[in-house]
Image (cartoon, rainbow, N blue to C red):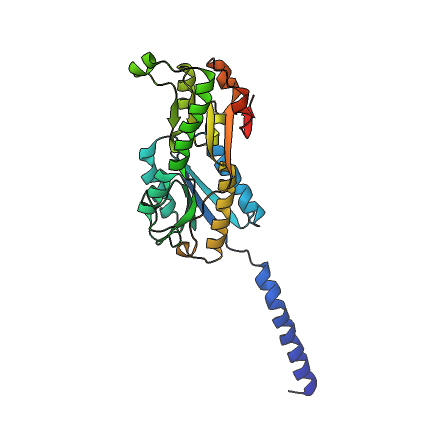
Length: 281
């Protein structure tokens, strides 16, 4: 081979090597499939929106490098095991589970696929072994429901003691003056029933107030839903759930639905209303 031919061959090879990174970058990146399991309660739409928006902010574009598989039990808890198994069968990369029943269903369905849960005390409910080192394939955010249910009772005491005096005769008849609904069970149907019976009702879920419940006190749900996207990102980057400690919320919100208060004939003192972070009028 002449010197000229050798030089031409070298230039050709060099040109080909230079093109390799461009060719590689032109290849479509893997589309991450995110499974989302939820009961289908008042805050279902907020959960879906915030999860999507949170991942979009982190650079994931639906239809390009990420796809969602949403599965709602539509309020029927007995459907959760079947839906969790379905997400496992289609081999999603991560499962995001909203509330304890969904987290437990997902955990029972797989030991392999990473799970990001948004649920109550994960140690007490048996979802993880430890806050700092969750163990297994589950991590995520606690919504601290047990503590907040007690806070709802305290808030009702403050609200109703000033709004009306509770007679001993009423207590003796066993008639409740208010009800606190578990966050994972807060549905529009329950809000409607409370309204029908003119019964003040509260929950730890903000979605409950948005759908007609009287009051909610709890962690900022939309902020937690969006924050769960960061756990998904870390897992997609190669982190193991056991290396991601369970986090707790830092922001809490008191919301009151004034339309509902009016409908049930409850006058809430101004001294109580000024404590609220959100008033639904």
